[in-house]
Length: 355
Image (cartoon, rainbow, N blue to C red; front, side):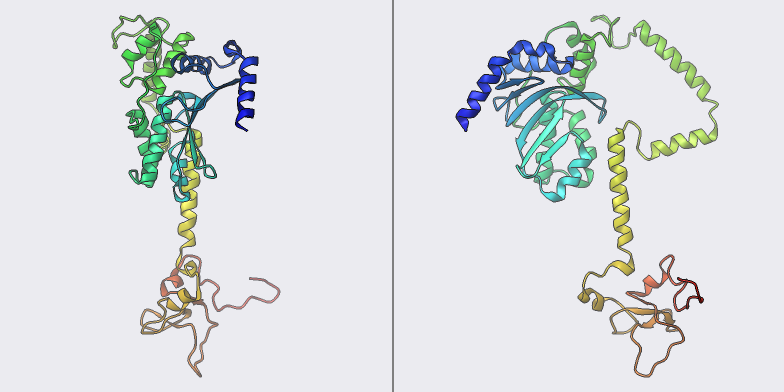
């Protein structure tokens, strides 16, 4: 099998040489693949639309760049195209915490592998280090989203990651190093790519100070100033709508992240609803162990039989006891007061009508 793999790899590399990168459709992915080749040598596999290194890059099991550029806005806007994989056993109970942290963390529970996808291997190392810390208990699962954002923004790399990529000493790189506090980072690298494509910093000179603005930036600020002047007359209802959105914490969030949070919030609400007094029994032992009528008796209570002392009589009637209404049994006295309960307890349906 190993020989077969080697022959297949040789066949691929013979048929597709490094010039095949020129046919890639996404410039940012292509440039990063070339950067890795310059730093770590030719990939083990160079197929159409993918360059893969099996080991040899830091402690990653594998690293591969795909001819794609996936828009990703969390925690800040950037694009993804490089994947890094490591062996990490993520237990089932932490899967939700991983999902809350980022959509770019891919977990294969069958193989005990975790793959991070981002704009460079630095960000991927941070992501995989974050997952390791989550699994080891260093991170509270309830705070996984906030902690992951902090790891990325503060560039908290794991101890095992010692790599530092060589950056082309061109105009765009020098400007990016001056403008970004953290270097290297996914955002700085993305800005360099955009600069090289002529999308940003066209009129910005390398010796410009941080506070000096280009003519394009000044025009944009003037337009914003005019918009703000008009916004001062904003209606109260509009202000309240904006306040509601920001209060919910949606500002700057990815649509996909917002959907995930809404889904998790809905599930939690369903769990709470399912945990009402009348739905907590899971076995006969729970049933008989319930706090029922006052005194030493256990079991359920009859909500249609008040005992005159603020409670209810036991669901089961004593020998010879008669009650005016049909029993409406619930696990606890508190369950008798649940919203929507008791409106039709002990009442008979009218003829020809169903309850």
